[in-house]
Length: 286
Ligand code: G1P
Image 1 (cartoon, rainbow, N blue to C red):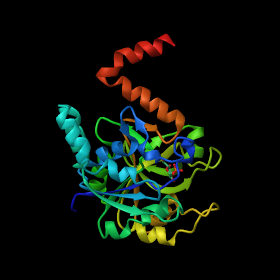
Image 2 (cartoon, helix red, strand yellow; image 1 turned 135 degrees about the vertical axis):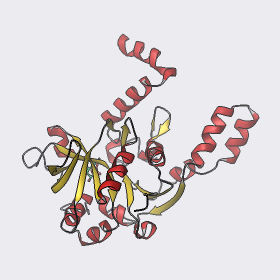
Image 3 (tube, protein in one colour; image 1 turned 90 degrees about the vertical axis):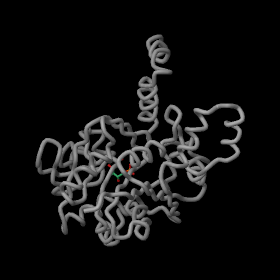
Image 4 (tube, rainbow, N blue to C red; image 1 turned 120 degrees about the vertical axis):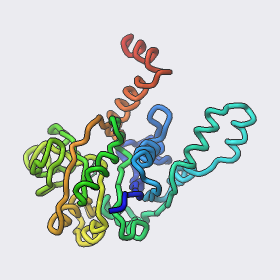
């Protein structure tokens, strides 16, 4: 089986959890330390062998496209001023991957957003990265899933242990343990809450799908809110082929949420040599 080279990043939402910051700018462009959220997802994909990325976008979000494009005036300015480190960094961003920008004209949920990429993906298997989630792992999180995919040759979703609060925020799986980190998914439910949760294993924002997911999405009925949930589509896919869950190794921040965003900013800044000492002194002084 050929290695997976394509990824899809759904980035068409309103970012309501982050209002008012997201009133006129995409949530995906909010910076954690000094990089927009979406760049963390793009770099993680590229480090895992992805070469081509489709971003599902919507009206008012074209600053994401500009971010990954060349910026000749800025590059010339940096060159003239001798700011060569920034110049390299800015040029590097536009060379990270090949991009395809797909508009989701109306928001009908995550499953619907992923369906927008069907003609781009074609008959290949592909990765999906939700840019709200920042993973800080010994090896890139989506790479951990891709390794599992190449072993099992079936769709794989990333799992993490969640608390009762998390059972209201994430899809939850019914797992059958295969090995330390690999589970076969027997069932799943979107945001059940602790009473209806099958387990404490929540679906976090990374997936690797066979192209059969598109047929499953097309057969998925909208939920009570009129949204086509990817969790419901995966449930249908399960009837045709196995789906596995992988308990990832590392740390994850829900940076689409204000609290998670602040935590990610502090912890990732503390890991940077230029900020660590002064920032930890500042935090201790509070
Ligand atoms: C989506 C998925 C959910 C998953 C979560 C991970 O929810 O529907 O199953 O657990 O991403 O971040 P959303 O955050 O879009 O509401």
